[in-house]
Image (cartoon, rainbow, N blue to C red; front, side, top):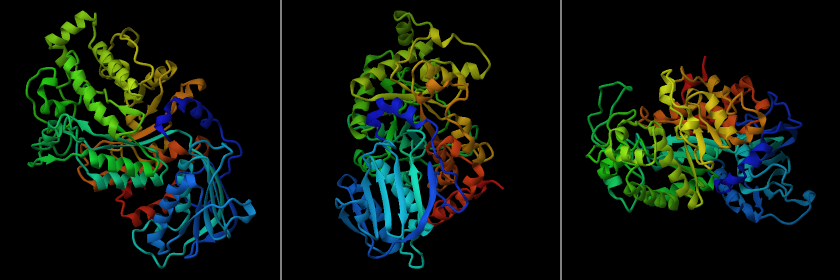
Length: 557
């Protein structure tokens, strides 16, 4: 998916959400492909990769051809020759070849593909490079799991069954969030997760880079953001109310050159990185670096405990807007994503209500509710991003709903009295009644559904077992059909308060990531949990070979 093309999402989503015609029923003898393709049926014969196999490609697919050759080389010991695809009728195409061809029929969209394997070779056709890449991921899964090994596996039989696949995704936003702000995990962890997203045909890496407990992205204009904001003296351990501490400092951040490297790595896998720079709340680390941008103006330290914090940006001060816009200028220079995530969640209003400067602003602008202050700030930042050709995304508090009071059973002023959020803003729904998501769609907002009770990977397997993850449906049941195109897709979130290591991240992420991948890709009527569990037996072998530390108990009893 090209997020630079986000304005066409609504048209494409409407097309892709239509019921699929002629869907093939999966059978027990079909390969264990995850996520399950739209159509898949057996074909005659089989294809055996050998030393003489070559990869032929259309010029537009040269990067994908090189990716495939690199993937095959190490485990097989073969070095497939890369050759331009000759202009020839289908019956004269090269034999013993893997062919990557551009399909100009425009029948399966930007990310769709067809794949056919048989005795004479493999043919993958796609309208765009992304579709060809996803066809390659299906081909990789047709091989024995040893194809994912990082060393030569001479004992493996590199044969794939004869099969015909016609495939395209259900949703255009299929995201995984990695929280690097609470714990800094580093380049190799990011790349390792990107590789898994690619194999699962997921196309958005939502990168949470700033929060109260750490600022993890170099901003050259404001060096103290990393000199101060990337370091904390201690860290809470255990759980939310724990008094236990690690007793040692924690620090780390990504240089701009490292960010560029990871963005390139993701782009090669057709994954868009959407950065999240939190504002106006979850800002303690930034305020620790530059106290003058905080509402109180007093010095603070980078938070050592987790959970919601008191300090927030002073949105009544023009210098704060300059500060944040300068930061976002550097962020946009690093990330080509059309979408920039600005957080916007869990803002404590107490500090604003105690501030003379903010109260003066509210009086001047005739605001009676601090939610109006946040909405003003959010719309202003949205306009700034829009002026740069970008689009703001934020957690659903940016709509102006009082989710805290609603959670306590109280009543607040109706959202309609707070004001209207910029129409271009994308709502990242994470908590509250699904009616809030439905209302946002009816009002014309695009939505990514990440309801916490079904998609938060920091939750235990008792809270969100694999079956519950798989059962998640991004389109709210009460949403009328004409608004379905506004549901762009879903995200699953690996918040890292209690996952300080890569091993723990993998334990929490896998196997549930496979369920979310299938939700995002597979037609709803194709989903079947028991069939999914059967295919996951092979997926476990793939993870074993790659050394992915999945949770065995995540599969249930």
